[in-house]
Image 1 (cartoon, rainbow, N blue to C red):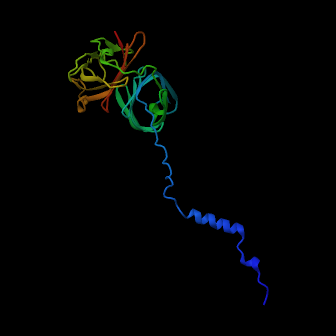
Image 2 (cartoon, one colour):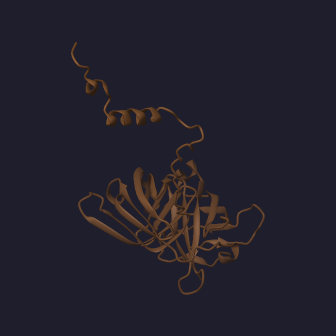
Image 3 (tube, rainbow, N blue to C red):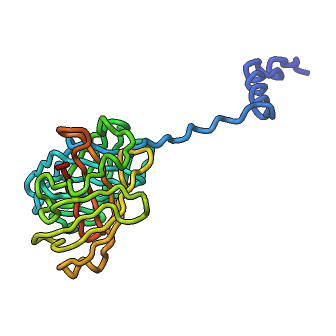
Length: 275
């Protein structure tokens, strides 16, 4: 009978330890805490007025030449982004969603009071309390990049800042057929934002009667109203115009009023000064 080989029948120590650790891993202590969920995504808050130092860097109509437009202002509230170039009579009206610091959505471009492009893809980034930068993926004036600069004064507004009967007049005459905007202090739900429009533009001989009210806790006002008595019959297909208004200081406190009002086909927007 051959001698017994004890070495061949013993399990090496490293293998025993490995098996022991594996068995321990098979058991779960119910008292162990569950893995912590990932922290929720905190969305940036872009609401407010963006002052007249922004820009759009876009193209001319044939997409061949760069077109840098400075002095662009903006207003942002409730998923709506409005950008105005007073000097070029261009308005961008967008809707967007926010995920973290990123925005995505679409814009409609108006030039000379008339809608020129719609459903233009928009993407960008919010630096809260500082700026919004982004890209427009359309053609011509809706093909390029933009930046809006958050205004230093974004405190809450009230009606006293805009109530100046018959004393708001266009800064540059764009659009030329809005000779004045009258803002009253009526608290009842009746029109208190009124313009009697004259001249040879799109809104020739129109009356605009609307309601303007501060948006609580923001530097913005909401406006909703209708046009009537217009020479242009196309305007009666949808006489309802809505938008936002803000104020900024130029020579005196709150002596400039920024207006963006649209109905999807037309807009009358511009900057007004206190007379």
